[in-house]
Structure formats: C-alpha cells, structure tokens
Length: 205
Image (cartoon, rainbow, N blue to C red):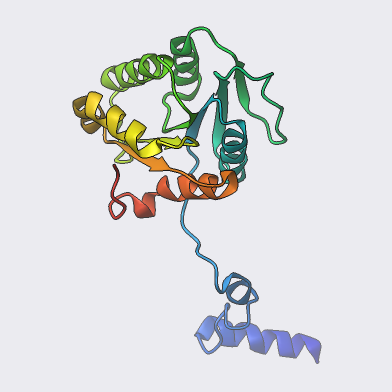
C-alpha cells in the first residue's frame, strides 16, 4: 500500500502535477527575510582603533564564508582570536608587507574595511593594493570595495580617500563607502554594500 502511494506521488512529481517545493518548509522559514547572493570574498580588515566594529565586521564576513584577515594597527592589546579562523597581523610596522603576503596567498583582495581613524599606513595600503591590481588585471567585473567605518567623520574620510585616489580607484572599479553606527549594524551594512546585487544601485561617497 505504502509502495503504491509513493509510486503515485513520484509519478505526479515527474508529470508536473505536484511541485517539489509546494509543501516545502523553506519558503515559510525565509518569509520576511532578505536573502542575497554573496560569493566568497577575500577581505582585509584594518583595526585603526575601533576594536568593536573590527570584530563585528570580521565575524560577519566569516559567517558569509569569506576569507578574512585582520591587521591590528591600533594601540590596543593584541586582537582577540575568533572561532572560524582568520589571518591575523598584530601591529605590523609595514602594512605593505601585509598586502603583499595576502595578494600572494589569495591572488587578490576584494574588500578592505577600515575601522577607526586611519593613519598614514592607509596610503601605503592603497598604494600597494592598487599597484597589485595594475600588474594583475582582474577578469571579473566586481572590482573592489573600500569601506570606511567606526569614526565620527567617516564620510569626510571616505571623500578624502576618493578625492586623492580618484583615478586609480576608478580604473580598478573600487567603490568607496562610509558606514557609521553601532558595531553590529555597521558590520551588517558593510556586508550588504559588498553584495554584488547592490553594486549598481547604491551610491558611494
């Protein structure tokens, strides 16, 4: 009896009379949620003194199955370890070395998140990142993202960066965004800004 029932249901499914998802719990469990495609990205987070936002951003990108590295450029004690694994550079004297090692291991960096008020090492980072992209042209259309977070003048900082590096950023399709708020909300906003679905509809600074 049970065999006959299963055979009939399979026949209905094959003929199209029964949808495989018609009674699935998937649609009910995701109702009210925004779901976007987020391919694995290579993310470098620079802690320039806003530890809480850097930690939240690291966790968010790890949860999105990204490869994450944190460079602790703050004056605080060592950056805490995170479950899930990250590449950690504690208080590097030369940020260029960090970028060089990551681009060698990862073949590029897709996203850079700045947490806190950047110092002159940010210029070294951008020079090295842009130099790599100049000598290793990408075949994809994503380009890159530079997210400035965690300071009271994030928008001004982002505008200064974009003004100074305008041509180089544009040549390599690197978009610059400023995000400010509570650490967890800032991290989620940064993640959303980096999603391919929003690349052409969200205006950067």
